[in-house]
Length: 260
Image (tube, rainbow, N blue to C red; front, side):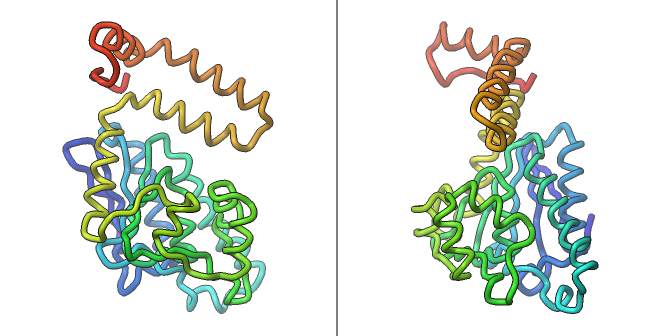
C-alpha cells in the first residue's frame, strides 16, 4: 500500500488504481513510483482482469509536481522524466484492459497518464490538456507521442503548441476520450466497462491490445503479420471454442468465457 496510490481489487476481477494526493493529485516522483508498483501488482495478480485508474470525484491529476521539477538540471531531468516514461509505458503495456475515469482536471502529466490507458471516460465538466508549453517546456511523459497517435498530428500540434485546456465535449469530438457522462457517474461507468472486459475473453482482449499497440508502430505488412499470428494463436484457447460453439448454437453475444 502506497502513501498516495493504492490498488483495490473487487470480486468481479476489476482492480482500481486510486490516486489520492492532496490537493490536486500532483504527480511527483513518489507518486509515479507508487503507480508503477500498483501496475506491477495488477500485472502479477491473476484475479485482476481489468483495471480502472481514478483520481477521485474531484480531480484526476492536475499535472506534475512543478516545485519538484523546477530545480532539476538537464542531466537530472533526463533521468527523472525517464522514470515517468517507464511507469506510463508499463501501464500502456499491461496485458489487461485499462480505463481512465476522469473527474475534474487531467492536465500535463495527468493527461499523459490517461493517454497510457486503453479507454477514457470523462465527466461532463472535466478538462484535459497539455499546457507544458506555457511553462517553457514540452510534454515529457509521452504526450507528444501518444496524443499524436490518438487524435492525429494536426490536433496534437494545436493542443501542444497552444497549451489550451479543452472541455470533455471537445475531447470526445476529437477522439481524446471515449465517453462523456455526468460527473457523479464517471467511476461507476468506468467500473461497468471494466467489469464487462473482466468477464470477456481475456486472452483475445490481450491479443487485440497487442496487435493494435505494437502494430501502430510498424509498417502495414508487419502489422498484418502480427494480426494473423495473434488471430491464429487464439484457436488454441478454450474461449475461442466456447465463443464459436455458442454462436452456432445460440447466436452472437451469449458466450460465457473463462479467460483461458
